[in-house]
Image (cartoon, rainbow, N blue to C red; front, side, top):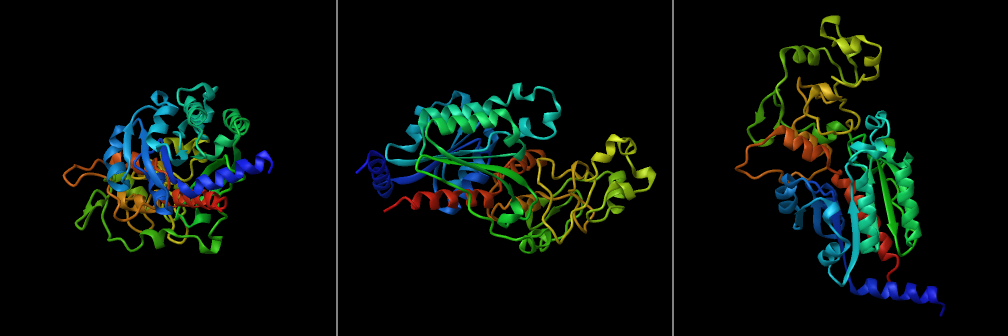
Length: 364
């Protein structure tokens, strides 16, 4: 038997005996972790420098939260978390702001303070050598030299790498989020599962949140304390009442338009102060989803912005996901950051299923 076949046979025998477990870098409150868990992967721990995520992460995912900068984490630290007999999976989503279209308007952003996090991710891969890795990020990252270096280095140290630009509605997620998903494996070729939905099957805003009780702006539902939203100013209420689903501020009367709208540069931001449409997926949920003026976050019918509950559903968090202690006062900015920064749970599940299918294909 040739050496290559012997190694493959040893890998398959090891897979039969070991537990498949993951560590989630930049875990936040656990969107990706929860998706992996739903797929059937045990997640041992999540690591994130934002310690405010600890409660929601741990209570929902039965995994340890480590509030630390990954630059201070070593490969040996990860190995101790996994355990000696685990099939090691490393996943994560480095903060995407440095790679966004908006950020790239700033010259030499590759030298910015957060770009190094991708290289820290690579360092941890090199030091711990997990069997499978996955990374999720904004699609614009694929065009950057730092990402191409990341892929090239993974291939140099023995990983088979694939990456794909994902349109979330293609996987049953009621949100027009576009993401870059990378998968890499020591076993062999690995790819993300094929899309599960065609355009005619896309999950819509109405299917996702249409049955929720009505609430007014600035009010909270008596039966669900997460079903609350921010209060609109008198002027923004007039703007909201003049808005139609998928419309723009261009149809408003001049007294409602902002000064920036009247400039040529303002015409590039047509979705701000917009309403969503019932019969299609929502726009990308950001950390500012509760602010009517930051995107198309107006409710299709009610004169208000999205509630926290609605945003969590559009991010495909389960209804029973706990975002704060029962006795904790809810802060919409904190919840907005936690929910808007999360990987949609359903996308995490697709990633997890892809990894499990890949590993199981090498079992005897």
